[in-house]
Amino acid sequence: VAFSVLYTAKQKIEEYDLPAAERYLELATAVLGNKEDAIYLHLLALLRLKQCRIPEAAAVRDEMLRLHPEMLRDPVVLCNAAWLCVHENKLDEAANYLQQATALDKSIPQDYVYIKALVLTHNGLHEEASHLLASEVHTNEEDFLTPLDVKLSMLYSELLCLSKNIHAAAQVMKPAYAAACRLMGQNHVLSLCAAE
Image 1 (tube, rainbow, N blue to C red):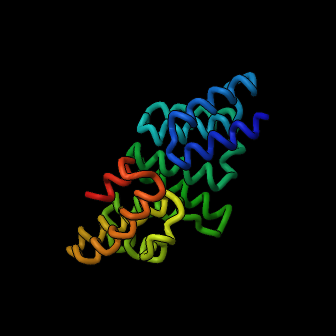
Image 2: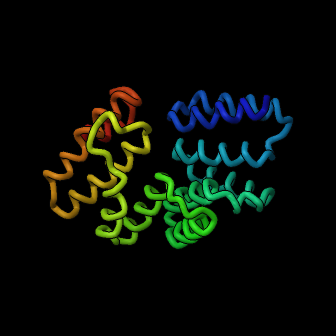
């Protein structure tokens, strides 16, 4: 039962249905009987991050790693820790987590690409970030399957704008906006940002 509840919470986080994710994580604590489960803590840190409650997310991440240092062998956990470090403006620590993640798993998931591009961008390495993102960005609205696809396009578009390539940026955002509306609805924050 606990696995099912935690899996549903993970899905809700990925869908940006954060109130539902919060409810499922509360249910998970009742089923688990404690708040020290490694997966529960990982998901709670991710939820707090997506809620922009960065200090709370960092505290939960630190507690998870203190109680469950074995989680540092999970590339997904390392990528999420890196993402949080970017939000904490701890870019060297973020780069370290990303390096550990790729040492464990050579396949590069989209979330790694997004986080790595954020680190490069924050370090002023716009051309490197653009090159990294270029192969991940979709040009057809139908190819966008997740909110992360939209976020990759948004970041790439910003980098194109910084390099004064406004026309290319608009071409990237046109399918991204349509996909954001399809995936999350026209009034979702990602859709509104894509419209900008």
